[in-house]
Image (cartoon, rainbow, N blue to C red):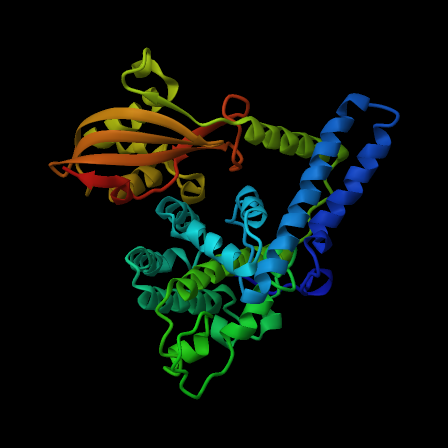
Length: 418
C-alpha cells in the first residue's frame, strides 16, 4: 500500500472531537435531511433514522470520553477497538489508571490479538514484516516485553518509511503534525499526533528509573534502560494499529473524490447500518455440542467438516474457499489454491472429530475439534467469520455472503497436545 500525502481540502489536521470528522459531519447533514423528509413521506422509516443518529452520537461520546480519560496517557482509539467494549470499560472504571489496566487486559487476550494482527496482513509493508509482528506477539504472550517493544518499533519505522516512497522517512523521523490522519478517530487531537510527541522525544541523558511511555528515541539509543513492562509493550501495539489506520486514512484522502452517492444508496447504507446494530443488540451466544440431536447435519458442522476434509486430503482449491477476504484479494482460483497449499500442507491433519460449535460473537463461530496433527493427538480451535460478497462483515441468514477463517495460520489452531 504505497501512500501519498493529500493536498488541498483533504490535507489533515488534528480534530477536536470525533464529531469534527468529515464523514461524521456529512452523515449528520444527510440524517437531518432524511428526518425532514420523513415528516411528509416514508414516516415508517423515521425510527430507523433516529436509531442511526443515536448510534452516531454514541460513537462520538465513547471516542471523546476515551481520549479525555486515556489520551493524556498516550493511548489511541484505533479501528480495531470495539466501541461496545470501550464503552463498558469507561462505565466500569472511574479513573485513568483503572481504565488503563482494563484496556491492557483487552490486548492480553490471545484470541483478540490473533484477530487484530491477522488484519494487518492487508497492508503492503506490514505483510512483508509479518514475521516480526508474529515474533513480537510471541514475546508479548511470553511477557518478554522489552524484545516485543524493539520488534514493534522496527516494524513501525520500516512501514512508514515504505508507505510514502517519495518521503523515505521512518516513523521516528516524522514530526507529530505529519502523522495527522484525515477522517479517522486516530486523528483526534489527543490521538496519534499527541502520542508522537512522546515517541520522538529526544532523551540523551540516561534514565535509570522504570518508564511507562513508549520513548522510542531513548529506547533505541540506550538512554532509557528500564522499559521491560506490559504498559510500554501494549502502547507499542496500540501505536502500531493506529499507524495502520493513519495509512488507510492517508490513502483515502489522496484518492480522487468519487461521485456523490445517490439518496437511494445513502438510504440503503443507513438501513443496513441500523439492521446490523439491531442484530448485534439481539445476539445471544449459543453452543451446539456433538451429543446434541442433529449435530452432524448442523449448518456450521457441515461447513467445518468440508474444510477439515479438504485439509486432510489436500484438496487445496476447497481449502482456499475459506481464505479471509482481505488475504484472497484478486487472486485467481489457482493462485488461491497454491497459497492454501503453502499454508496448510506442512500441518498434516487426520482422524478429526468436531466436538462443538459456539456462536460466541455476532459474526463469528468457534469450532472445537479433536484430531491428529502431524501424528500427535491435539485439541484444535478455530473461528469462522461471516463476510458479505463486497468484503463487509455481514448478518448471517440475512445478507448474501460466506464464512471464512478468521486466522489463516493453522499453527494457531493448536490449543493443547495429549
